[in-house]
Image (tube, rainbow, N blue to C red; front, side, top):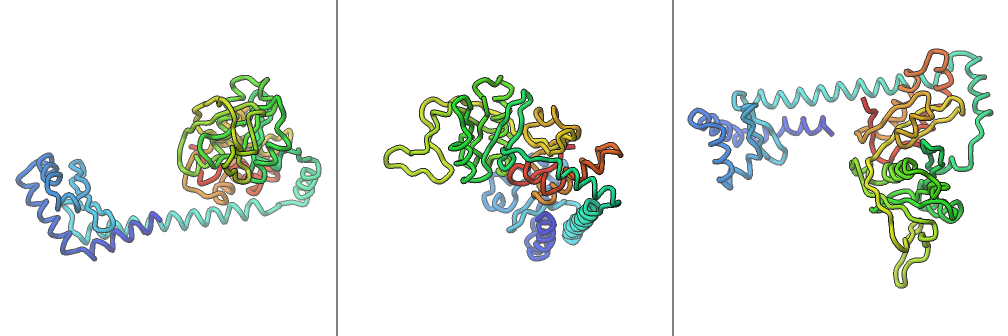
Length: 338
């Protein structure tokens, strides 16, 4: 997308050559006689000019014009030089993308290669030894105080979480906006504030907020008896949706996600950063970014292996596979925090 934008900008210079040359020459003449502040005022008050010139950058001696695509024109450069600048940027983005794709391919090959027969046998023993818990089919994590939190991955799971696994002493969490997992803090009415906050962060992080690029959101929690499957008279509830009766307790929380490996239990963990770092031997923190699930899962797996001690790398490699890591990724695109 970035590469295409630069290429289109370069093409647009030649497609609008005469118009852009007139604009450049007009600004060159104006610059010889007036200050940038005066030029800005002229642009702002001239309706015809302001439709074309979207911004003035005195510090860069340039202007931004809109000819269907935004182009930055440096006053001291010719139009061919400006076009070449955009083509060169497109070329660099392509080279970077090609390098990234090759790096991803190399990482996949490295992770798929089992170097020795002993390592193969060890991986097999790990998989046999690792017994999955009932809650692992859902989204889940354990709070830093030791309380289990589960959430649905889809509408069907949202219904299952509430109808089958929500108990009277739990707490129910959901974002104020649609598109979030139905989240249950098990034994939540006994849980301290830290666990309630982490459960709220979990509900927000694995909601549409992450995909929308928002770094915080409003979450409410209620008692189980306030969660109703039946809608008000005359209203309709879609599958996986619920009607909340009575007062809601609201929290505004920041989105927080880390993914790591708990070697003792031979498993990957994902969820709010403070919870993950308490249990994991190695972990990475995530932020909203530009990498899709497949790409970032491979990158996380590689990073966790890289962080591990030499004698633990074969363990990490067998536990933290890209497929396993993807189960803990928020919806939308992400990146590893530096």
